[in-house]
Length: 198
Image (cartoon, rainbow, N blue to C red; front, side, top):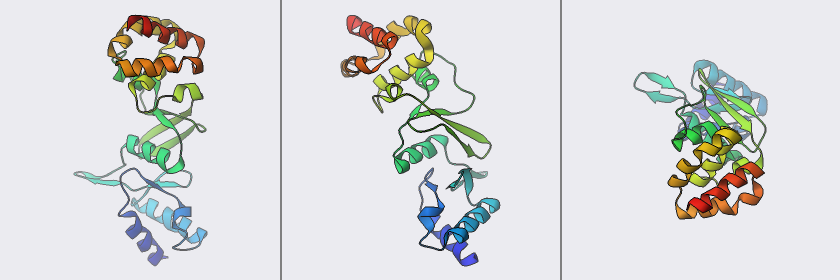
């Protein structure tokens, strides 16, 4: 068993921050029961952090000891490794757009898959299932606008329209307008207002 533990430690030493490991990835080193036991042993020693059922990440060495990897890096890695769509929550998008100073107490992300929680040391990161229309326009301000409007809700979104319109480039405005058919009616109406302001 100690040989297997050492092999796993050697293999995880090259893993980038936030990338998670599963027993299935390590079956070339031993049988499933032995790999599961070795991962559990490494987690008990603090050399791995169990973030969810069957998911482990390597802690990061800092100035004051070990810490969990950044939540954003872990969530990005989860998305990339499993082909899961993951976006920041509407509250974080609204904050980034300057529409609110409010932020969730814990980190929350929207996902195309089922809701779940990840434990990164003392921090809990929530992945919440969201409808497909909230997951449009990845990696763009226009996509953040959709998620921010959804979080603000129908009444508060009305007063945010002018502030949002000022922040949109022509290409972002065009991208938003092209999405109207996929959005709920009240958000499509709000987005149509950006065309008039543009």
